[in-house]
Image (tube, rainbow, N blue to C red; front, side):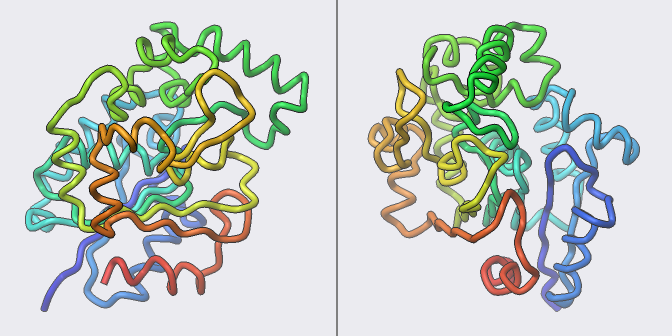
Length: 276
């Protein structure tokens, strides 16, 4: 019997919460016979797992996950990974930094691969309050203490201060090759058989929502967006995404609904086939 394997990780939530990640784990196990699902817990218990989604240095989290995966004998032949919200870009970092065991398929559900420059359920540029809070966050987001202790600051991407972002973002700027090319990152990511990205068309949490498809705001302003294919990251192919795109390895899916809102039917029809 072939035992299929899947690794799941979520955002600001516990791996074992029965109404969120716990429900996803159960759903996958019900739909795919003999599958082994490893739902990652970052911490010793549910409380620590949830708190670490806010306060534990992302680079430390990625190292912990790499170690955990390498110690699981059921994953040694490779595994498929599914990340929800910020868990998606964290799992991409795992793919880029840790090639043992090999990740075969990465499914990103509402991940923010170019980061965020907005606040949950905030109306964005048209709101003076939102603009003020955004500027306040930006003024401290790249300080050493905030970068090391606030998870969301580690994927805060300020298009108005590109040099600040490039130089002081401890996580996102590194995995997106903003300070130079790490050939290992590029080589490891290209080993994926598929990189699936899901965008939620009515997302009020991720700003800009284009980040869920690896797009973002054009540098130097905060209104116009660009697609992945229009970005310097793609044109310079710093991560190998252009090569992967031409090889048919990138899959862009969109669904109606707000952040992480989908039906079981949609999940089964659109995502489960990548796990079989």
